Structure formats: structure tokens, C-alpha cells
Image: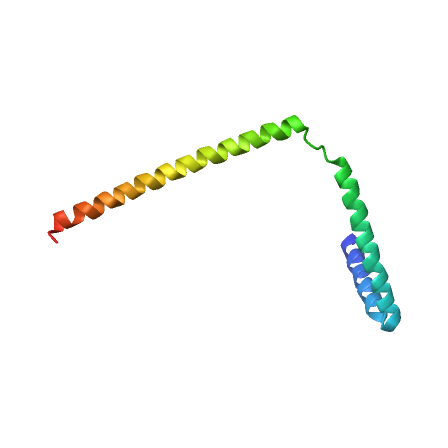
Length: 101
């Protein structure tokens, strides 16, 4: 029963929206657009006030950890790349000996 009432109200809202035509409807849409932007901006400001920003000490610590992880990752990828290059180079030099080319 409640679902039917919700569906009926949704249908009536759709009908009301389609009945508004012309310059009046256009003006209402324009105002609604401005209100939406203002509402979004107000909500964004209130959410930003709730954010707990890190302290300068936390920023330094997080930066050091991030740079360290990146450096270790770069070294690991470079080592794997070098090893793979050496393996392929060994295969290239051994290949002609095995196949007598």
C-alpha cells in the first residue's frame, strides 16, 4: 500500500513538471540551478570545516615514509629490470652456440 502512494506521488510530480511550460518554467529552472549551486557550496564548506587536518609533524612523517617507499620500490624495480636484461642477454649469447648459427 505505501509503495502505491509513493508511485502515485512520483507520477503526479512528473505530471506537474510537464505542465509547466514557456518562460515561467525556464525562469524556475534557472533559479533552481542557482539554488543548487549555492546549496552545494554551503555543504562543501561545512564538510571542509569537519575535516581534521594533519599537523606539520604528521605531514613531515608521512612525506618521509612516502619518499622512502618510492625509493625502495624504484630500487627493486631497477634490480629486477637489470636481472631480466642480464638473463635475456645470456640467452641471446648462448642461443647461437646451441643452434650453431
